[in-house]
Length: 89
Image 1 (cartoon, rainbow, N blue to C red):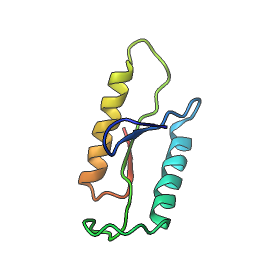
Image 2 (cartoon, rainbow, N blue to C red):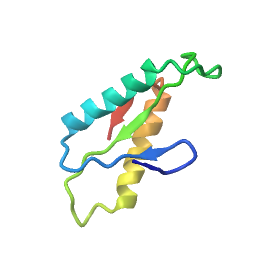
Image 3 (cartoon, rainbow, N blue to C red):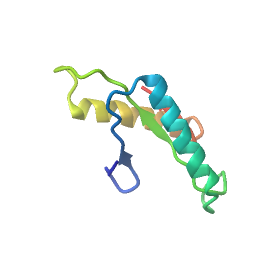
């Protein structure tokens, strides 16, 4: 895990299929939600996370920048669809 931006983090899961990545993303969402950290500006009233998930078999066609862009687009889809969730690109 690494901080990628102000409020954005990147997690790389090696040898992980989309089903396993979905399970990890769901656990992360559930864990953050269960902390019940107050967030007055949130419609939920507490801190939640939204995620964009990309699963990719390594290839010369997919650069790290392209993977980040796909994940970022999925992240914004998750935010536009109500937050507190993950979307797989």
